[in-house]
Every structure is written in C-alpha cells, then in structure tokens.
Amino acid sequence: MYWLSVLSILTSVSSGLAIPSASESIWDDLRVKHSWVTLPKKWDWLSYPPANTTIDLRIALKPRNEDALIDELYEISNPNHSKYGAHLSKEEVAKLVAPHPYTLELVKSWLHYHGVNPAAVSTTHGGNWLTIPKIPLHQANTLLSASYQLYRNEETKEIVLRTIGYSLPTALSEHVHAVAPTTYFGSPRTLQQTPQLHLTLPKGDPELQNPLAYGGTPASCSKAITPTCLRMLYNTLAYVPSAMESNQLGITGYLDQFANYKDFTEFMLQFRPDAVRANFTVEQINGGGNNHSNPGSEANLDVQYGGAITFPTKNIYYSTGGSPPFIPDSNSTSNMNEPYLDWLNFILEQETIPQTISTSYGDDEQTVPPDYARSVCGLFALVGLRGVSLLFASGDFGVGGGSCLTNDGTNRTQFIPIFPASCPFITTVGGTTGVNPEIAANLSGGGFSNYFPRPQYQGSAVSSYLAHIGGQYSGLFNPYVTRNHEDAGERLAAENGAQR
Image (cartoon, rainbow, N blue to C red):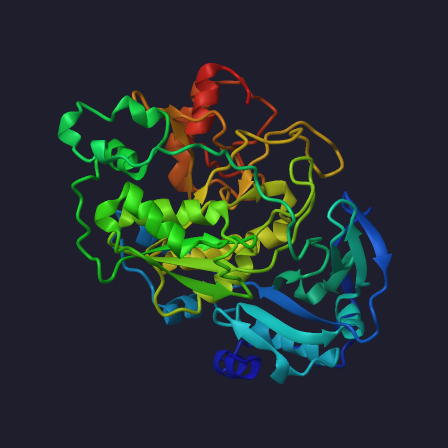
C-alpha cells in the first residue's frame, strides 16, 4: 500500500495536534540517533560511492499503542484468558499496529521538507513501516545528516554502503524507532557456514517400526537419531493428524541454503517408507534461490526431518535472500546474520500463514544492532497475533561462543545470548542427547537477553531457576531487568556446576 492511501485513512480522525509545516526550522533541530566512535571491528573505509548511487530506506514507526499490542498477544496466548485462541486477521493486526495519525503527518512533513515525494513512499503493516525506494544518496545524506560511504570487510572482502552516524529531528525521537540501512554494518552475502557434524546414518530403521518389540526407546537411537527414534522418544508413532487440510508447517532457510526434492524422497524411502508420497513446496523471497544442484546440508536436514515427523501435514520451505545488519564480535567475525526483516515483510502480507514455523538459525545477540533487533522482535509479535507459533534454535555455543567478551568497547566477560532466541515473542528450543535417559546437550544455548525485558509469564520459573543456581554466575548475566530464555542446556551447566 502506498503512503497517500494510508495517510488519508488514518488522518480521517483528527489528532488535535499542530503539525509543523515543511518550511519550519524544527526539522533542523537534530539529535544523534546512533553513531560509531570508530569503525566496527574488521571493517575498513574503501571509497566514496559514485555520484548517481541510490539507496532504499526503511523507516520503522512507533505503533499508536504498543502496550495494547503486547497485551493482546499475551491474552490470546494464555490458556486461562477468555480471549485464548482468538487470533487476529491480517487486517486486524494492521489496525492494531498502525501509527498515530500525528506520527504519520509529522513524518510526511519531514520528508516533504527534504524533497521526498510522498507518492513514492510505500507502507507495510498498517503504515508501521515505510519504504523510500531508490532515494538518491545525496538526498539520504541530507535527510539523515549522514555520510554514506563504502566499506570493506577485512576478511570476507565484502563491500557495504553505510554511514558512521546519523541523526533525526528531535521532534521525531518519539515517533521513529529505526532507519535502515544506516550505521548497521552488514554484508550482503556470507561466505561461511556453521560447521556441520557429519554422521553415517543407518541404511534404514525398519526394525524400529514395531514399538512393541521394545520396552522403551532402543539404545541404538543414542548413536544416530532417525525420525522413528524421535517418534518413539516423544510417543507420536500412533499419532494421526486431524486437520491435514488446514494445518501447515513452515521451515525458513537463509544463506543460500536450498533443499533438494530427490534427496527428500530418498530420505523418506529410507526412514519413513509409509510417507514416500510426502513432498514440500518452496516460496522464494527477496531473491532467495532454489538451486537443486547445490543443496545445503542445513536446508536438507530441516526439511527431511520436518517432513518425516509431521507427515501428512503440508510443509513449506521459505528460501530468503539477502542479509540484515551485523556488528562483528569475537564469535561472529563475518556476517552470519539472516534477513529476518525481508521474510517478515513477506509473511505478514499473506492472508494465511502456517500455524507453526521453525527456524534453525541464530546470531550472537550483541552482533545484532539493538534498534534492528527490537524492530524485528516487534514484527515477530505481529506474527504471533495471527496465531502462529515461531520456533527458534537456542544456539550451539552454550552460554556463549568465542571469547565471551562484549563488543561495546569495554571487553567485559559476559554470557552471550542468541537472537532471535532472546525475543520474548517466540519459543526457544534447546538440544538434548541420549535416549535412556535423554539429557541436555552441553552445547545447547540459553541465557538472559541484554535487550528485552523479561515478560511476566516467566516470573515463577525464572525465580526458581535463580534460587537453584544461587550466586554461581554472578556478574555474568543480568536476570532482573532482562528476559530469560533459559533452556535445558543451561540447566545442565548449572547442575554440573560448570560454566560452559
């Protein structure tokens, strides 16, 4: 939808506030939104961009009533509330997240002051996000009091267009959450993948198909976890889905990861022969690929196990291109972030969304700029309002990878949580190992967010957890003002009395 359409709808109700004109000096009273003292680690200045360079700017606006939005999400998610399960439609979510008319008028006046044609500005999510496509770079520099230049990563040699700092009019400080891309250094593509653990799987597991032959999950499942092992472990061998026509599972993919249909069929023949007719569909987003001649191990793993566990439920694989903002730290020195924002923009525009969506990607929280992380987390909340359960991996580095040092210049030792696992509006899933008994995997991530307040629904569980560990990890995390996504992996560390 375009700016003028949204503006005419939302301003039909008078705000009762005076809007500064496009000629007033209020737009010259600036406040720094974000600025780097020095370049982020691993980045060097390269050159000034060509004079004819353009850039697409995204502006996140404050919803009219953020508290009401979050309250609504918690009410429809609480089994003890009268609104439980009363999920919202796409139109109802857009209405709930819409900015105040005064915010839209104020931003319109600011853009007009800098010569931006309102007709060129498009909106998403009820006007909550604005996009200015192909704005000349000199105009963007003036608009944001910025200096966009080209920078190159020392290791990957990738080149990005960013600014060291940018400012907004003081009058907009309570109305604009974030502008991107600006100071959020990122690489458009990654050249690395998380190292994979390669196991030789059995030729099949037909001997496991008869659960009556075992008093529990067989010990052989401790060597290689097959779909049958998982179904036995979680007692779903006899489960038959009751809403096959309406239920869907979504699986997200990034970093040029593609799933292969032939590999999928062979996996089913070997490990779920009764599901050999299973398949999956692919949605390509923002230039995401679907190259079956170059499948990715992560994509194949996610799709194959997802399909084997959920058959005959329909599976959709989302292949999303691009990369979001990134700040290097000791554990992620080159860009391993995924383009969550592009995927969210797509999914929230759909009339129907899979009821469950699984994502096995994540980044050190401190490498994701706070403005960007909070804006993306807010969009996850909108997906939740639609009745979707978002599942994210808790991470592969326990309470922190690399040196566990902060990247804010102080170099403090601190547990490093994972994003989006730290967002309070998604479900974080940790890892386990073994079957008799099943225990937490010592690499499984967990922790306390440094960005997001701990929600009330976690109060009781977190209090018990903190009482259990006492002062063992004092100073390495802050549990009192931030949200916790403690999982089985971190519980294991506490029980063993060892910091991981």
